[in-house]
Image 1 (spheres, helix red, strand yellow):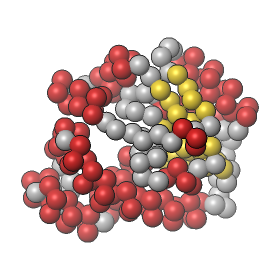
Image 2 (cartoon, helix red, strand yellow):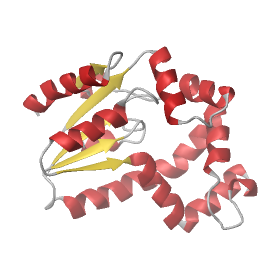
Image 3 (cartoon, helix red, strand yellow):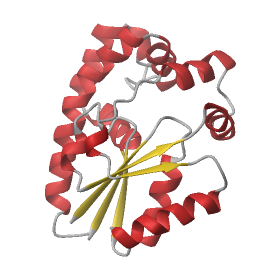
Length: 196
C-alpha cells in the first residue's frame, strides 16, 4: 500500500486536494487526522483525564466529552497551550495510526492522509509521497470563513496567524500553490497522479 501524506495550513485547500485524490486514485482510502483525533478523544478516557489536569475541568462537558470549541479557542490563542495538547495527543495519534496502517495493509492500494500536523507529529515517516498545499493568507481566510461561519474574528485570526505547522522540505515530494480555482487545483493534482 502506498501512503500519500497531504499537508498545509488551515484554509490552504489540503482537504479538497485529499478528497480529489481519493476520488481519482482507484482503490484508495482517505484518513482525515482531525477526525481521527476526535475519535481518540471519544475512546480514550486517559486523554480526557489528562485534558482535565492540563486545561481544567471546564474543557470537558457534563457527558464527559471534550468541548472542542473551548479547547480550540484556548490552544489556537496560546502557543504554549497548543504544545501541551500536542504532547498529549501526538504520541497517541502516531501509535493509533501505526495500528490502522497495519490493519489496512492488505486492503487498499493507496492511503491518503490529510494532516496539517503531518510533520509536527512524525506521521510523515509513514508516507511514501508527501504533498504540501500552500495558499496566500487572503485565500485561506476566505476559505476558512466559508467553511466555519461560526468563528469569531479573533478565532479566525488566531487560526490563520498562530497555527504553526512544521515542514521538512527535503521530505516534500510535491508543492502545490493553490491560489486560483478548484479546476486549477485539480489540474495540478492530475499531473501528480501521473507520477504517483
